[in-house]
Length: 276
Image 1: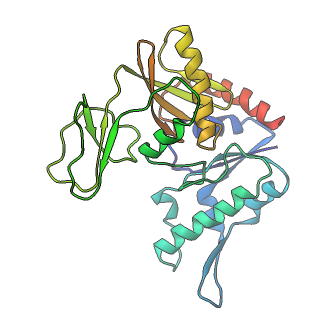
Image 2: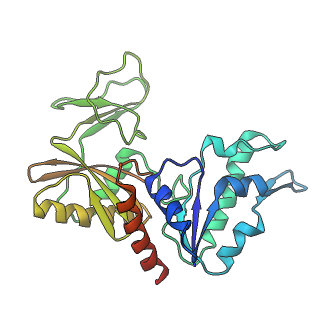
Image 3: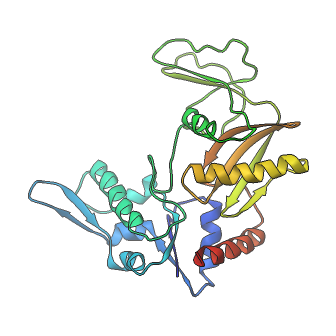
């Protein structure tokens, strides 16, 4: 049995494909994060601590050994529930409740991780440091992170990008803001952007490269996804002839892939996961 844990507000292409597949699969059930919040039970103990107990309909599949396809993301809209508790309390306890639920699954495509319910959500400079531990001929961007009002060191940088370290998708060179605090600046890698969508064992590239580069990106994309604690995700590279640079990993996929192709691959991969 397979269980998909998802948010109704997620724009994630992988989530949307899994939902479409679940509509026609007898062995798969979809569990909505927002439904769990809406029908959960809030309590306050004698010490004034709030807890959220998720409904039995959501907890049952986890006790039955169902394989969890973890696409759990909590958005601001997810927390707009009717409760007398402060929003910050609702946010923290909601995440704790779903962490307990996900961690109770015997098998999952992603465990709870750093700053996220679906693997590790890291700023770019920590992503690059982590990927540098892999034994792969793939570079990472040059950058500087100037704390406080110190100016960043950008000597020799070409095509500089000033951005948030949590901005995974903006890669157009720009001008330094007139006023900034904790300035993060990146040198845009040379070459063309290449997006790899990881669907468990399958990797789809949005650009055609030479055979060696494509083979390397297929291997690297799966390893990078696993490095961030998930079997699904999106990896951005830059390809400059035979030089490849890792730019960013995102759990939420944005690449536009033909729905029928996506669903066919998703169905095949979910069958392999169920057989684990």
